[in-house]
Image (cartoon, rainbow, N blue to C red; front, top):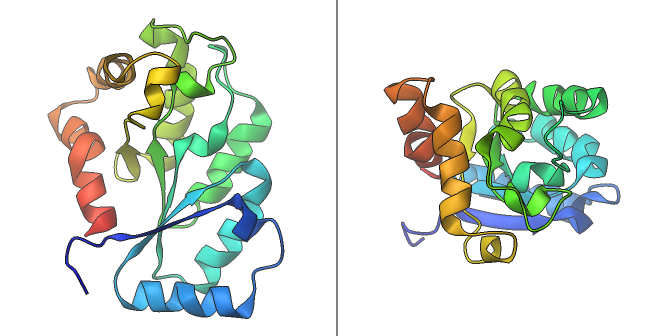
Length: 179
């Protein structure tokens, strides 16, 4: 009932098995209260998350940490592109662009923003300016770099996207997702 309560987060364990009836009822209750579900998942959980989105179409779902896709600075694999498109086909699924340095296959993570651009391009193409949400992953981000590195990567990427897209990415889309 507290207006500061925005939703809950579930990890991949909830999606590693068939979705249970009790879980689905809880998700319907969450949607009925206009709350969001953050999911900390990997690609192997996408089918279950898509099934949830289709079964409870009013539930706002936010995938955390770009679903743990490895980042190496090269164009992302077709498998990931296809998987992101499948998620993005569900209108209430959003992607939280968080933990970019943590997902790098090289550690400590590179600070050059361009290393992350192929990943950000793929996410931008799949989810567009309306369903990408910035997340710092602070303080965990300090393990792979710093808060400053993570936010500077996203700022550099958004420099040519315009002020409206910048505002959506950094706060308006989160305000929409979490009401």
